Amino acid sequence: MIRLGVVGYGYWGPNIVRNFAEVPGCQVVAVCDMRPERLAAVRSRFPAVKTFADPNELVSDRRIDAVAIVTPVSTHYDLTMQALKAGKHVLVEKPLASTSEEAARLVDEADRRGVVLSVDHTFVYTGAVRKIRELIATEVGDIYYYDSVRVNLGLIQHDVSVLWDLAVHDLAIMDHVLPLQPCAVSATGMSHLAGKPENIAFLTLFFDNHLIAHLHVNWLAPVKVRRTLIGGSRKMIVYDDLEPSEKVKVYDKGVTINGQANNGDVTANQRYRMLVDYRSGDMFAPQLDITEALTTEARHFISCVEGGRPTLTDGHAGLRVVRILEAATRSIAARGRIVELDAMGCAA
Image (cartoon, rainbow, N blue to C red):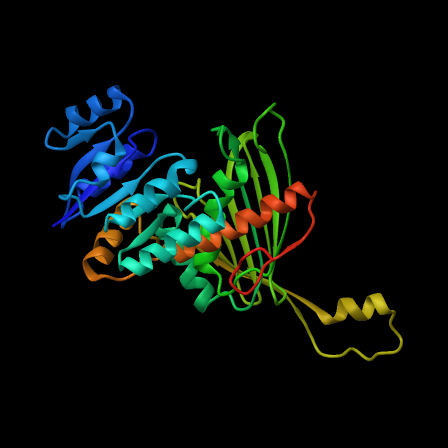
């Protein structure tokens, strides 16, 4: 039985506790939060769970095997490092840390102690994203582009920009489904609220081949949009997370270039149009696993702790995402200047 402690019972914490409480082989034994009313809510719903106001007490509790950290980004490094040094397995809310240097230290510490470090990139565990990974490996062909829009009105964060709050989801999805890592980043963004980080941002990722990715995130949109387009040489994918069903649609559409057209009686434009062939075939919507993503993630985390193996969203994946976010932040400060990434995904 893996005994779990949860630090943070605010917006996301109750979901973490609820899902892990239902995982076979796991027992939620403790919850920590600084607000008494939240701890009262824990005791009301889970009478057997011990509550703490001080995270240090929870982390040092020898009964606890693993810790889920569901707190603001600025606290991730200190709390996660403390838990790792106490020999605990850790699941930490996204992003892994505030800087790539901090994230790398956490990865090194987890590797050194032989414990599981996982990042709560929840979307990776959705049936839709898992199916997209499968389709990219088998159906799509060469990837041309990844284009996503993730906009809504709020929830505006006071301590991180929209890039670190919303774009982190799409970067985690890309890290999971695409076969390549980006080599350079360009980003622009703007804050329209005095004293707050950027509330709108546009991020472009360059790769060593012809693949290009573009992310648009915004906290001040009048509507909520969660849509991704993935174009390939054989098939194209539309992923709309707000669709109640058929969240993923696969289109047999594309453009191919035929052989040579050497007729000297036609103009260059006519010759080009003769070479281009537009393919418009069927669309199909694959059946998806509708299990709640956090349920899948909780089961996966406990299974990996029991088996001593890394999760799909381990510390290394979290580090790659943080490095891109850090490079994008640097690019925004330089009004879109391209920031090169080295082979490890670190800003050069």
